[in-house]
Amino acid sequence: MKHLSRAVIAVLALLAANPGVSASQPSGTFGVVSDIHFDPFEPEGLATNLQATELKNWTSRLAALRTPSAPRRGHDTTSALLVSAIAAIAEHMTAADFVLFAGDFLGHRFDAHKSRKPVNQKLPIDELSLGEKTVLFLIGALREALPGKPVIVTLGNNDSDCGDYAIQPEGVFLTATSEAVKEAAGADNVSSEFNATYRGGGYYEVRHPTVRNAKILVLNDVLWSKSYENRCGETGLDAGQKQLEWLKAQLSDQEERGGTVWILHHIPWGIDAYSTGHGQADSCETNVVSFLRDDIAIELFAALRRYAHTVSASFSGHAHYDDFRVLSNSAGEPVIVDKVVPAISPIAGQNPAFQVFTYEISNGLLIDYTTRHLTDLETISPNATAKWQTEYTFSEAYREPRFSPSAVRRLYDKLGKTGDFREVYHNQRRRVAGASALRAYTCAIAHIEAVPFRRCYCPDSER
Image (cartoon, rainbow, N blue to C red):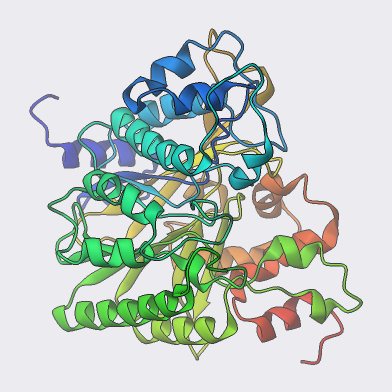
């Protein structure tokens, strides 16, 4: 076996797991992780100790905790869960060619901890510095867990020194994290414009690690969010528009080259199903909330439709639940699927999870994926082996030959019926209260724009 190439070994492993896949095309694997949301403020005093500790010693500091905070549903990632998740990622992504991270290293309301006063500690906590150090530590932890593999990172809405949805273009945070992000992706893989685009707005281009004539475009779509506010500067909206023009230029360039594009971003396309499903407005239509600004969404979706034949994959996080978004063309045909990957943080009540994909190396098309989730969240401890088990494999659970826009559209159609397909999809959403919330998630899969979504979600809407 030692004389076999990694590509051949990957094919053999794929065939063993899914005999329906042809061996005619060499395949590879890659991992996708999202929404770690590490909370360094628990247990009390930990943040102060970490602030005073060199980054290279953070891992040993966390491992030496006598009473690490136990993971809890409804809360962010504690040190115990972080250590367990990193170990599981290292174990299950050993054969991966590379890893994508879809945003949100920092815990929710990280900036709000400024009001916390350390007990019996003389050293004050500098939240600005601690936020930067936490992101640098987590990038380093992923790289250490996956030696020699590119780790391609995008930022989430919590990854900021100015607060939630408040990243400052050309600010201290982007400057402080730029070298770590570049080195993780591979300094030779990023474009010569990396410093300008990443420091200017948190977005950049990466040459695909394995697929010829392919790029991974890493977006900071926090700049496009309806919730975005540049509290620490004045050019946030300008940076968002500049990023959109950059994206259209990149897609045009790849079309001319006959190449392909993967997109890595944080916020899913389309409707915020959670906010919509829990809305308290008088009418169903008024409760519908889109993630992105309307003007941006119109341009973005038009560009994606225009270059749909160039975009072969897209990945996002943010929603915490395992999900999908399908973009259809003017004829109603599904052309791109945005895979929404589940979160490590269990703050939404779900099991922490990550995903491992198989893909064709020749063209970058996705084949299948498996979700690994933590089944014993409340009982993990430093002295016990956590149970990161297979939750499901797409092709098996949904009885599709491979993962594709058409397969996800068929899945959406199946969800309108009772049966095991609905059981698999709704499994992570068991703690989402009410049929209205579940219907919002289902409608959001295939209706990424507000008008068609309302027709699906609101029974009395005009058709």
